[in-house]
Image 1 (tube, rainbow, N blue to C red):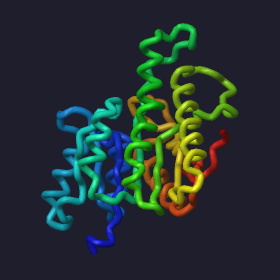
Image 2 (image 1 turned 135 degrees about the vertical axis):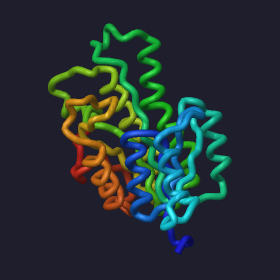
Image 3 (image 1 turned 90 degrees about the vertical axis):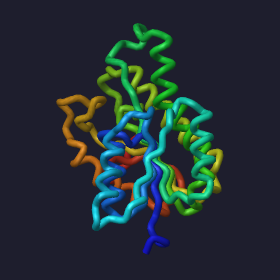
Length: 238
């Protein structure tokens, strides 16, 4: 049975959506490698401890790796550590926001921090770890409908929106550069979720969003090319 289990690498799995996605794939029988920042204990460590102590679940199904995604050397080191593994899914879940400022009031260092974290670093992960993903596997990144240019009729959250639009564009560049690739590429919109980023007024709980995110990714498995979709499986306009 262990030879047929699939493997997911979830980058940014310490809490909320990333942790929920890792847990959902474990529930579905996958092996999961999840990354966390720093060396402190996180929800992912707690989940791994629960699996190890659960007599009905074999140990080793969840591996916790440390990764500071904004450090290219750490991304390369993670690739080297996982060189013997074949991934069926690489999913990058990472985003920050620094408040709702009009773009003219955004300090340069804040602009750089958000763009590096939300757009550049996820693409570095995709480019660096892509060789580990099986030819029929899936590469996904967490986007947002706030990255949709055509849906932006109200404005607000200028920098966050811009970072997600940049991420979407960079994924399109990646897809065009690898047009003959057989892998599935996904930009995932999880909906408006009650997290530290989404805030307490958001429509969805993590528990309501995550199963749809995973089900949508599974439904697109084997559909090569780039797809921008939400947690209900609907296409998101660019």
